[in-house]
Every structure is written in C-alpha cells, then in structure tokens.
Image (tube, rainbow, N blue to C red; front, side):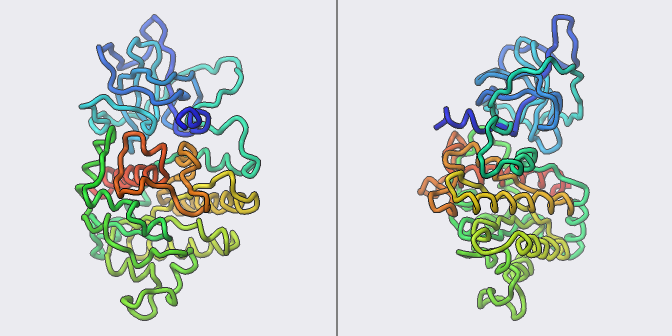
Length: 395
C-alpha cells in the first residue's frame, strides 16, 4: 500500500535549491546528524508552497537540517547534510529526529533564487498532481490540488476571534459540525481520552493541552447521521434540548460559545443537493458562525475514484465551492480531500461515505495516517487547530 502511495501523494511538497561548491546560500551549516528525513520521494521547491519552482526531487530517507519555518509550520527551510541542496520542505511528509521540534525554528519568508533548468519529463512524486489525473476529476481537480492541506491563518481570522472574545466566547473551546463521521468516536475523541500516540508530531501536544477535554469528547448537537448542510441550518432538525427556533448549528454555538467550529459536510450532500443549494447553505453556516465571533474552519471531503462518475464529479464541484468560499471569507480550509490522496482507498469505505478506521478508538501517527481515513483527518485537523493556537488563540 505504501508503494502505491508513492505515486499518488503529490501536493504538500518540498523545495530545495542547489548550493554548489562556492558556498552560495545563507545560514547553512554542516552537522553530524539530520533534524529529520523525507518519508517519500518529494519535490523540492524554491518557496513554502506548491506554486514555487521545483528544483529537484529528494529520494526517501534523505537527511535534512532545518533552519526556519513558515508561520503555520507546514513548510520548513533546510538543507541536506552534505550542503548540496537547500530549500523548503513540506512538514507533512517528514520524519523528525527524536528531540527535534519544528516550533523552535525561527519564522522565515526567504525565497530561494533559482534559474529553471530545461524541461524534463514529469515525475509522479508526493505533493503534486498525478501525471494522469482520474477521468472524473479532469479539469477541476487541479483547483483542489493547488490548495495546501493545512491552511495559513489570515488577519481576518484574528478579527473574528477578537469579536468573539468581546462576546464572551471561550478561547479554549471548539465545536464540531457534520454528519456520521464527525459524530464518530474515531474523530478527535482519542485526544480527550488519552488514547493516542503523536509519533513525530509531538509538538501537537500543546494544542491538545490548550483545548478543553470536552471539545474533543463531547457529542455535538450539530452532528448527526445523515446530516447535510441544509439540515444543520434548519430548526426543524434541532434536538429536543435546543431552544425553539434555533437550528442545530445555532444551538451548538450558543451552548458552547466556542472560538472555533470545525465543519465537514458534503458526503451526504452529494446525494441530495445541487451545487447551488450546497453553496447557499454553506454560506449560512459561515455567516452564522462569524456573526457569533466563531472562526469557521471548512473541510474538504475525500473522493474515492471507484464512485459513480457523476457523483464523483459532484464531490469535486462541492469541494471547489468550499475552496472558493474560504478564499472569499478569508477563513481556514483543511484540504482533507488532498490529504486523502495519500491514504489507501482515499480514506473512504466502499459505501463512499464512512471513513476507514482502526476500530479500537486509538489514534497513532506512526504510519496509521497513511492507512486509515480517520487517522489522517485527525492529524490534519489537529495541525490546523495548532496553527490557530499559535497564530491567534494564544495571542
């Protein structure tokens, strides 16, 4: 299965640049051991994002020494042990050396100066779009492939948070909105019950410690089996414990007064709603959250290529709507669709709805994130919460 991943992952990538023997480049130094190694064959780029030039491709298990990071730690600036290459690498596909913590690196905005070499044959490697895209996503999937898995945090997000603090929201509380996957005990609950192993992502412990245990473990009144974005904003679907006239979303936000709400809706929507209906209801969810000073975090949902072509295309359409809405409102988007490309079966079961899981309510980031959909979703969600904690909630 891992051999299969090697051909699919391509978007969260690495960038590195040739130094040469003249000592070109700044801030590099030789050291005996690496701070981390590449997990897969990875593209190497001139800056912290997939829009930057690919310089070369690092093989698996290449040792790197890190010098800096971008603000949300999704990309690290580093060089190879022999000082041959230097540039940016995606943190999602790195194994860190025990004792190394990316959070201690200084924030950098350096862009490597590099002249593009003559065109070469395309290579399928983690972090890029596959050379031969699936037929049902041709022409649309590139819009999703260009969006990072873990979002950068905009100034708009801080403004929403500041408004929420004026309204008395709880900085260390987040809410969950979604369907059967969101209400599953495999989603985030293990971080509240202590049933987890962070592996190389030990820095995420600070975020687990920051949020209340109930944020991870409590049932949400805005998450239920079969929920769509239309039922979440319809008061007729509220639980008996909600005040009359409030939708499930309004009920949950008013009950918890959180600073953040994690939203993933779409796996059922593709069966019942048109793209227009989906966009309209998602706008209502976003605006309702913002009006209450709650940061809405949207989540793209995975697509398994074996689904019916028309429905698979609809999934791409709905996910593209989420990308556009996140840009329009300046709010975070977790690109779980993209992260799912590195997971067997795209992290989705054969019913095209339920994510795959270990089945023992345990979450381990020691390779399970590339085997089970829920484990990968837990990882990228926790990384996004960490980005919010570092850049907004802890300020």
